[in-house]
Length: 144
Image: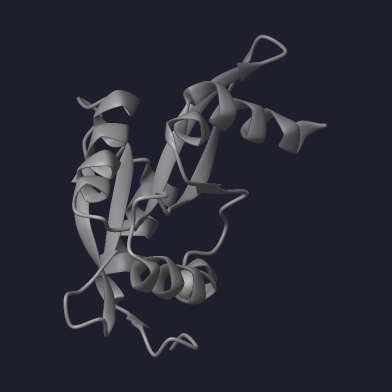
């Protein structure tokens, strides 16, 4: 359990393992329940969806002044070789409430410890942070 008292629902780890081991999904979006006690899976993105769809789902949370966690399966080329990296996002938009920002920030490590093997961790506060260019820079920098 996090310092914030928020627990991680077992489904969060199960769905993540399906993404990590089988690449069955493109992304997973997590949210803290309304009672502020548990992190749960909010949405699983299929391979028919795009990064733009993923970003839009995060912006939907922003319109409610809320934060989200997410994992995205980033595909790219490095030295002409196809690569894949899982990227963890803490979406904490500037417009989110102070309570949301503090809750998500203080619970982040609890979720990350359960989701083992994520090499790229990003905190995104605005559209520039969410740009694919920024995400790719962070993924590729793991090779340097």
